[in-house]
Length: 203
Image 1 (cartoon, rainbow, N blue to C red):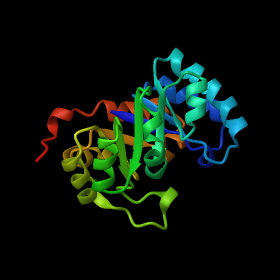
Image 2 (cartoon, rainbow, N blue to C red; image 1 turned 30 degrees about the horizontal axis):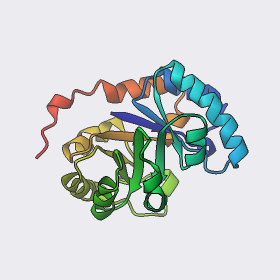
Image 3 (cartoon, rainbow, N blue to C red; image 1 turned 90 degrees about the vertical axis):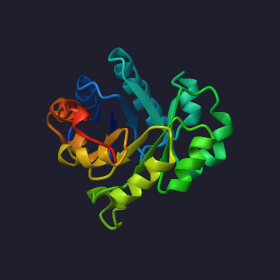
Image 4 (spheres, rainbow, N blue to C red; image 1 turned 30 degrees about the vertical axis):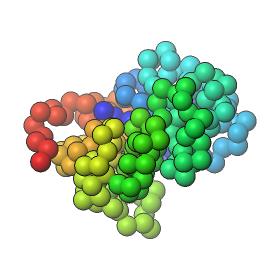
């Protein structure tokens, strides 16, 4: 499973142009992250991105904007853990409820309160969190051992590291900076998709 996370700050070309290219690669999900945009600007962007994603039959998750998700009838959301804890009781009509977690305890609680997937990170060193020590594969293994919902790994994810992540129990991966900066997002997405999962034995 491959989830692409947008990052408007790390790219040099048109956001919508890159978003279209990412959709052409047919990832399983896209999280529309644009944290420096005001609500009005995010809504305009979300409307355009949702139209593109629906045309390509790709699940688009809005990042944090619950009210907008309901307004645009797109019941797929990604939330930081603290936001999820304060709002989980309003999410019963959502299809995908994705939660960012940083410990096994958070993953277990998110699952108990109705999350459909968790995103665990950051696993490896990554430029967007350069000053923060990566949590490593042992962190990922612990979360995967305690959660029965899909666990997605994020942070420094590359095709070369995919085997270690899946062997640690992850259902799939999230990619952000690499996909936003890639001149050919489809090629990068295909590299992940074409890895044969049967070669990985989870211990």
